[in-house]
Image (cartoon, rainbow, N blue to C red):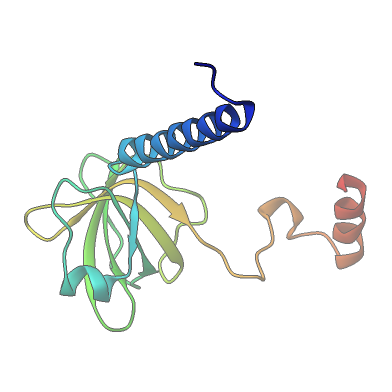
Amino acid sequence: MAVKAKHQRLVLLVLALVVLIGAGLLAAWALRNQASYFYVPNEIVASPPAPDRAVRLGGMVEKGSLKTEGDGVTIAFVVEDGKARVPVTFKGIVPSLFVEGSGVVAEGRMGKDGTFIADNLLAKHDENYVPREMQEMTAAQADKIVAETQ
């Protein structure tokens, strides 16, 4: 018995939908461990994530908290949001915009002792940021360079 063309199209449509949903579910399942949740110090203190879970911690670097360890590569500092403080350690090259009192996003995980162990630091700047190379230029010179690059 032959299948009518109308039913054949319906079967192909349902099959394509099942494959598409299956691919979406497979992708979501594969990425569930790669997702990096964002916390501010207040949230991470109130409800700390599991020690092995990859998270991002964002806030301000507390003034007077930045210390370089004896190995010269590891730094310790505190990230705060006005409500809570979280100690952070990082081993590696620090971004040039990373200074006390500035914004930072640290990617890493919580240690068992309550210290955030950062694998990567992202320094944030405000809307008044000017690259070092352009600080000595006049506004007109800087505008000309920006216009040439666009």
